[in-house]
Image (cartoon, rainbow, N blue to C red; front, side, top):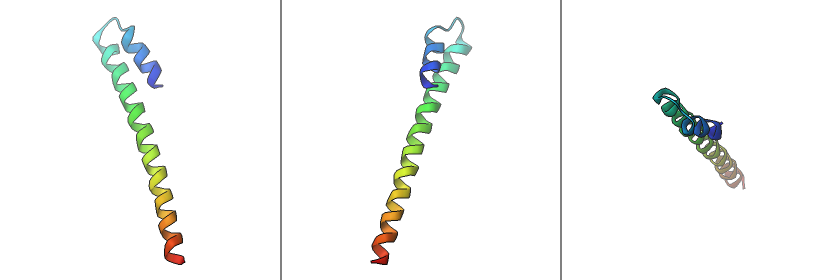
Length: 54
């Protein structure tokens, strides 16, 4: 989706598609970073629980 947003921004005929494409790309990249952070935070919590039980 981020690539589609960048494609829309690069081919934009007016400013709405240009800024909309950039917002879509930035939103997708932010979502990916948030998902990676949540995954590793969950793994850290599991490791901490296992260490407490030992």
